[in-house]
Amino acid sequence: MTYQLSLFCFYIFSLTLIISYFLIPLLKRIAFRYNIVDHPNPRKIHKIPTPILGGMAIWGSFTIVLAVHLAIVVIFKGDITESDLVSPRLKFYAHNATIIIHKIFAVLICGFFVMIIGLIDDIYNLSIIVRLIFETITACVIVYMGFAPEMYFLPRAAVWFVTVVWIVGIINAFNLLDGANGLAGGVGMVSASLLASVMFMANQPLLGALLITLVAGILGFYRYNFPKASIFMGSSGSMFIGYILSIITVLATFMINEVSSHFALIIPIAILGVPIYDTFSVIIIRICSKKSIVHADMNHLIHRLIGKGISNKAGVLYIYLFAFFIGGVSIFLVNASITRSIFVVAIIVMIFVFMFLFELFVPVKCDPLRESGINKINNK
Image (cartoon, rainbow, N blue to C red; front, side, top):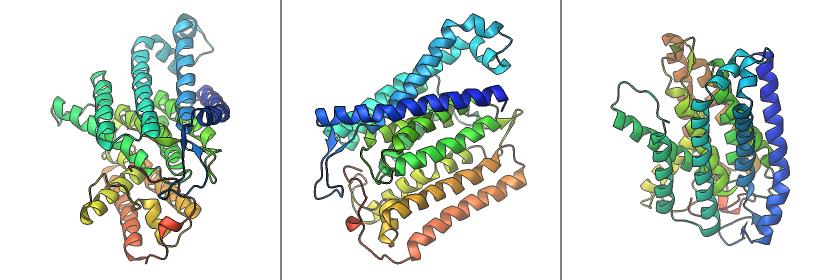
């Protein structure tokens, strides 16, 4: 990464962080004024009404920074392409502004709809079926606008189907993960940071910059959410995080010098391994318990860890480490030989197996329903 690119990334990170941080107090006042709060009830642990507009700070800071800089590129396109002070990469982006703006505009518009779906869910508690319908429509729209990877071994219709399932799946995986203070936000920051590293390694700095912007937006909110939450991100925040990460992984090529990773598909799956693991494990538990897969319960990963006697805060930090090691190991798949790729994949599988065995053999020591610090149980 060049010196100029490093300065630019630091600049957009700082700007997004500041906007997100100072949006939270305003959103808290709005939430209390219009009663957009999560009220305590017998199925929830928090004792006082807590605002649930934190996700709007993440979405708002990300969107504002992106929209403003897109406008700057459009307005000063000629000056940027002719300036000797601008890096060749930025000149390339400015020269191809029409294509880039089309892509980014699609990301922002569909991201707005995802945030709105989540916000309506926070206020009116939508059924999972209604959410899935609107999420699928949004995913279909963005795939139609050109967001589908090149998979020459699959028919185009199959690629579109897989992409829509991936986007909807990751959106809901992060929404399901949001069960404790700082959990979805922290995992989102870890995943986005690791994925940004891969993008810079693979010479895709625009995607890396988008991920850095997302990290900064989450971090501004995180200050108010962990360890003791004065505001929740709600479905609007968790769904938006999942949406952006799913879109970036669809756009990414995981290539260096035109040499693709031998196990490229493993990289996004590993980086997003925690929400994927949590989602599939909960579904399996519910099926084995002969319950509906949309039945609300306390069987998510964080709840199961608390059931092992781990404190809420320690459980969240444990999941952070799980996400970091799984995603961090997968970075070595970029531009790796077949032998090294097989070795790295084996390590990733071993980490997942360790997590499974830990849950299987460590005895339950407490009731997670009584552990303080769990935010909420609704239709997740």
